[in-house]
Length: 472
Image (cartoon, rainbow, N blue to C red; front, side, top):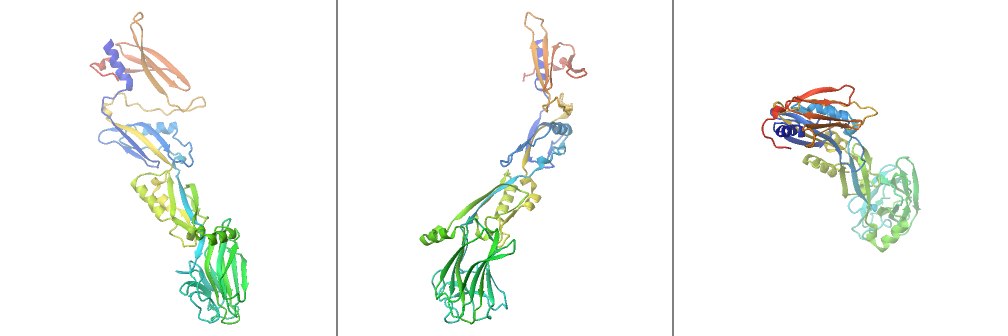
């Protein structure tokens, strides 16, 4: 009797399969197609399916339903290959992840001394095209007008820009226009001007609102201002996106050259800029850090804090959340970082748009990962492994917790009947059923109750457990 009981316990402990099984685990970004397969004559036995969210940006409770669990098991168990997500239409599981971008803008938003180029400033003429701004060094070609040295280096070899009054006619206008600039709460325009000569006309400066299309005059000087460089500083209005335009108006004759040098736009009040820069030139330098965190990867974002010419790309960092560590995804992330703001001109605002990468490599930008654990087993050598899972019917009185089976044994004391019982407990949150079943050498029956109808199913004849087995 004792030997028979030992053998029966072996059977009910883990529903043991006599075949050797091979366990597998697959963890991949959630996608519409996640195939699993078994080789040879073995078939799939799903052990567990779980969905994990590794994102720190916006955790949400998006999980598989019990119906999806049961449908997937019913579809995959006993098959050699299976797509484990084909029964999972839940749209939230297909959501994309996020990115965070840190970058910095130069405190000196713009600085041009014209030594190497015009720094993006555009020279044009409002009239016949002869009277324009051009680069110069030393003295201009007309005597008794214009500077003899630049302002930056106070040198005859240093450069500046000037409007050449030896060309053009009276009232012609030469324009020098910046690219688009982003307003800040505190922003100062500083420049040095030289207006020397008997025929000097006028110098005007405008701040032009790029969105509204209007302009406001912020500076005006006319006539001879002596043979010297003078500084002008103007606190700029916070108007969004704007441009700065210098306009030189031709005077009565050729002795009317107007020159500009060392144009700066600084993210400070003009009083702070003048005092700090005059006492310590290094105080005008530096950067302001910015952070855009937890942005959806399928969106388009404009870095409005500073235009590309003011941005310190070397200090930028674009990170993805979650970030998959596969070699292929790491290469894609690096490619995006390397191309950051390289497709725009100096004055343009940088726009982050990685939709092409997301479309071509969706597996690198998913929000969720799925983990599937399964065994590959031989169907012909498996004992008690052919039953299908029944999809649960959920009601208002029931929960989504699957039914659990607790199989133990109970044995009477020596003063009681020497009969061994099987203790079968079926538990879910809506009801609990307990049955004590005598185990004898006769055929063993198990009765499942707790439903509207009871049914009896013959499990197995204990005599098949002849031999010696190790208790689990």
